[in-house]
Image 1: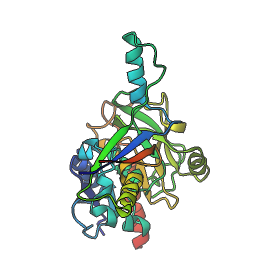
Image 2: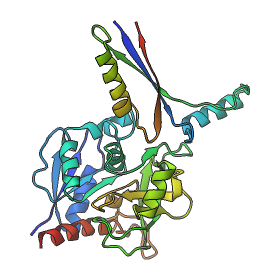
Image 3: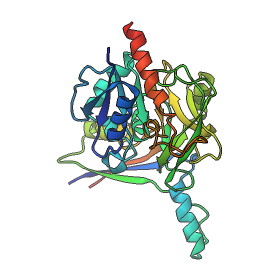
Image 4: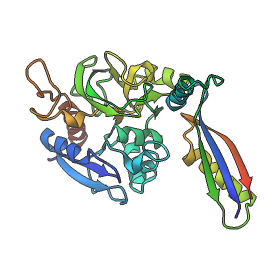
Length: 82
Length: 235
């Protein structure tokens, strides 16, 4: 069954406290190659049947209006995975 | 006339009982409302209480903002009914686009619980008229995702239009931009804030004051304001 994958990230200009905490932990255990970590979300929307343009448009609308909040996040990817 | 103030219970609401109690102590009749209904039961004002609706899944307040009753809440807000969002209720109001901005995890990653000093920045709203502009109050704060943010343009607009209703005093507890603790819509009938006025309404159960331990009742002014606002419209 096809799946539409939606990726959402906190806005680049905003502080991401989760990512900052993970970056701090990596640094503590000696993995110092990474200067920053940002944490986002991945949604997998399962579609019964074919991913038509209408279904994709609905996924885009849902991604913008429900899965993300434009005040604090950006939708950075919408991709169909068979 | 007895003012009837509805308190909406969502799955995961925790402070709905305290909000009802605060309404009663302030002299109004609390009306329990349910998120899954489309019925506001003819109430005069609304409180969206604190808690962790839907376990804060997706984003705090985001799923509750899609509840059936939110259609009626939006209509009522547009018609001028006083609506107060406390903590998780504030998060719902920003997710429902009834208030500007957004709320993210506290900058220090910690859940903060303390009695919080605030300055009332706008005493002309339906929920703040009992205060003086610039008045300092103390009510409890308790949240993990209380960092108020908005884009530069929105921030400049709400500062310019007097839509910042409350500001944190002392150390900023959560990284909120401009120390913003609560905001109002342009009309002044919809107000949201992270700290909890409903927990500071009865002597013996509020924050400590200089006079006595747990004697703080600064939260009463919120509910007294709404009662006055409803009475003014009815008169």
